[in-house]
Picture (cartoon, rainbow, N blue to C red):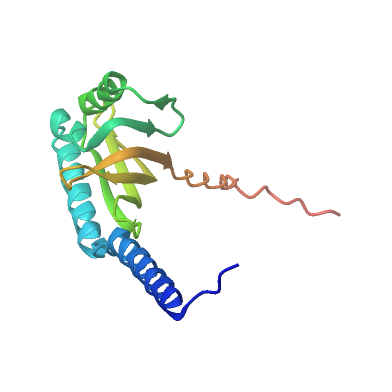
Length: 188
């Protein structure tokens, strides 16, 4: 068996060093840069979109209200079926907009954007006020959660829209009817 010469060892060390350096360069070049943290601006964009959406519902503007939904959006309304098609979603909004009275408004309480910057959730409270045939306004309050997804163009759209009503306040207990004091008879 031949004995390795100093020249062979030197060449092997240089080769090993070159291969190691090439691996480090390849890894460094393939490492994606840390994405810029845009959560604050994304939160502001979602809050603005939610405000514009609420304004559209107050104006009963069907096309504008529908424009806040992502393709294949899902709606889960309180005491209603899961809606996952655009036609049924649009029909529901159209029916709601046809009701007399102030209609729907909502207010954001919080927004949390994922560190990835492509998904977020918003929660808040809504007020749905409609008038009956006598003009009396019936006011329904509730809360909601919207899951937003960032679109390819950088805008945010609602992918999942969930709401439920607040519990109705308990009816006050009936007050006893005051009866006239009965005449007292003196016992003899």
